[in-house]
Image 1 (tube, rainbow, N blue to C red):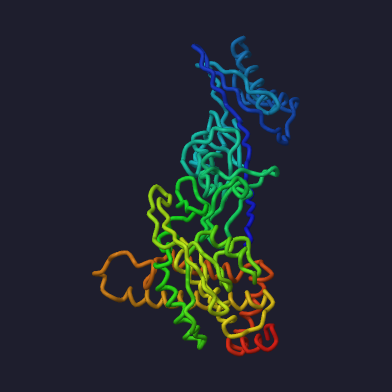
Image 2 (spheres, rainbow, N blue to C red):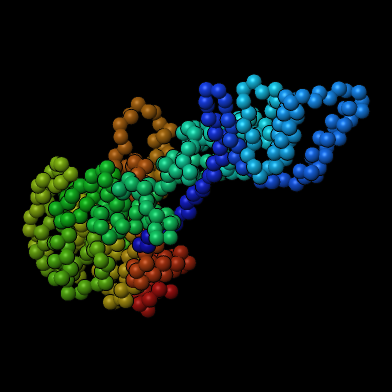
Length: 479
């Protein structure tokens, strides 16, 4: 089963601030404007002086009296100086006192033409921000998420909207579904995480190596805010899979009969009564070691078709559960007596009904091949055709559950209890779980189980099951 790696790119921007500082004193107010870039002008200082002189001369020629007093001359000099320094954009504006006869010239004040990109009103004299190609009142440059002003130098952008960095992380930075923390960035500053190929669970890459347990059925990792059931043999089972789990040999017998009926419907009836035992992982591993005709096994074997006489420790009664642990596991010894090529079928206890059934269907095919006198087959062919039968059974169960759900939805709602997870109508999660088990079979990377299934399934779809089995009997390979 392969795992997916995702990499996301974050964004971070910087804003620059430009200020108008208002320093209040008792007698005066001084405005210190931010420096702006110098623009082109048709006038230089000498031309301004000449223009002022011509203006005074014109007034004299028109008969207007020129008052040659010291106070008037002082005012004229102040006016000339103000005009000169207004066009000299490299120097700050002059200080002015309350009560001056010279009012500010609006057409010379660049701040009068600044429009806030937020409220669309003029900014005027005061503090403002310059960012995102526009100017803003400080209170108007606000976070898209919390609607509060952004006062930090750094902020984040999403769809042309600014965010506080913390708000952006909360909304758009992925959180780990296992530890519930923000997934950290890697050395390159990118967000890297792992994702299950079937379930929508994403998590920090470190959890693949830090001992975080997985459910032995659906393979989802155990989150910090949830507890999995701890089985006696070291496995863990999530509570959703526990809902449909089969815990002992007696409880599994109805499912075993259903698998036998499934084979009979394919004209592949198994006449011999083969014992079915649910066992712990240790007992299954010991049985594998004792089995002389060992077949190719995966790292976690969950079922076995035996051909040798052995004494097997089976789970005889459903265990008591308390505090997310198995309190009492009831087991007993079962002696297998060889009466034919198959002595028993073993399956791990505690697995959901659909997974237990698919394992049973797989192991039943091993038994059928041996009982029908098939020659010793290449593991890829034998395991592949057994996986085909497991996949076919899952298909029939999922199709039957869908039909049952449709019929139930159209009936009276008076019976409003929860659906049965063992047989009949199934929960939405159990139907999803069936799809996951099919997905596991279809996408297995094993050269024996995965490639064997895909070759066997292609042959069955092309030639049908009976002709494929006849070809295997004659040639030992898929048609």
